[in-house]
Structure formats: structure tokens, C-alpha cells
Image (tube, one colour):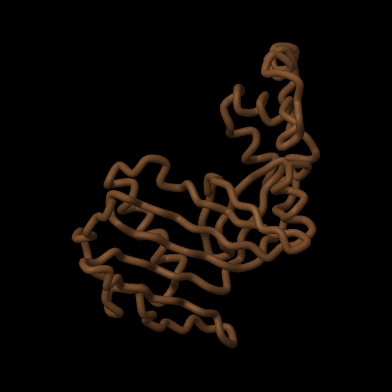
Length: 199
């Protein structure tokens, strides 16, 4: 199967000097294009030389970076705590765009995690409380029974937020004949340097 990408082009003059603002702009356009889960990003972590990747939802973006939440006892959580260097990738098929992000994560404060947890739907809170994420369980019924037994929905101590503080971005726009447009932002001496990459 081979598709020709024909929905856009990307030139140096199109780019905001700040990659966080550029990502925010593309995210807004992905929302307007009705992308499914436009904030979904593939998050790659690594521990002891073995990488792993999964989809997570970005739950905030600002000058400090990209925010997401997880169970710190999950494989993902353990890897984040052991090695904060990560990579993330967004893919928006309707726009034929990809954004890659690299950098280090740091934990959000307990207060920030509490605030976000309190804003979640009750069913999502319960799921975070009862799920021993990434661990083997005997059956789905175990989870469902535990969920039915939950009374209080306070944030578990092992569930919280991280912010990915980027030092590199790549914005990719699909083009015809595989001559895609790629621009990399790299943080050098506290300033973002933008360079075009060959496809």
C-alpha cells in the first residue's frame, strides 16, 4: 500500500521561532481537522538498553513542556523514574503531519497531580485507583470487583504527572514523491536553532 501525501507543505517561514508555540498551533489544527485523539502521543522510554513505547495522552502544554500522567508503578512509570530521557511522537493522518519530541521528564508536584486527578471523571479516577497497571492479573473480573468496591476517590500516591522538557523537536509534513518537509529545532546554549533536514 502506498499513499501520496498531498495535503500541505512546510517552509522555514511558516515556523514559529518557539517550537512549543508551533506544536500548539499544529495541535489546534489537528483538533479542527477532527483527528481522533489529537493529543495522543507515542511515548518511548528505555531501561537497561531495552526501549518500550506506548500511546499516552498529553494533558497540558506550556513553556515548561508537555504534561502527561501515569501510574508510577507501571512499566512506563518505573522506566521514567530510572531514566528520564524520553522521546515522543504525534501523528495526525488527516493533515499528513508528524511531530517528534525528545528531552527529559521531571515529576510534577503532588499538588499539580492532585488538581488534575480531581478534574477527571469519577470512572477514570476509580480505574487509576484499582488498576495495578502493567502487572499480571488473573481476570477482568478482579478489576471490575475492585472498581465496584471503591468508595473514596483520592489520588493514589503512586499516580502522578510528568512534564517532558524538550531539547529537540522535529516537524514533518508529508509531500509528494516522498520529498517530505522536515525541520528540526535544537536547543543550543538556551536558544532554539531551526534546520531543514533531508526527508
